[in-house]
Image (cartoon, rainbow, N blue to C red):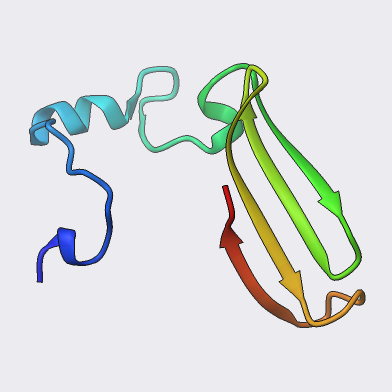
Length: 87
């Protein structure tokens, strides 16, 4: 099974050496990937809580990049029903 069977994400054009260079952190000499907020100044996560639904909006410099909707069975949020990227 190829990657194309599992996702619509295109494969990188980077070779193994370029990938290693991109993942290396010069500041602390670690091999890591950053979190969403660490990666770029100007990124923001906003949360809208509607009882049994939470909507997480991820943006960069005012431009919405994607939205996650998390749905619980009820307002107590004791049991997760679903999580979906909705935009």
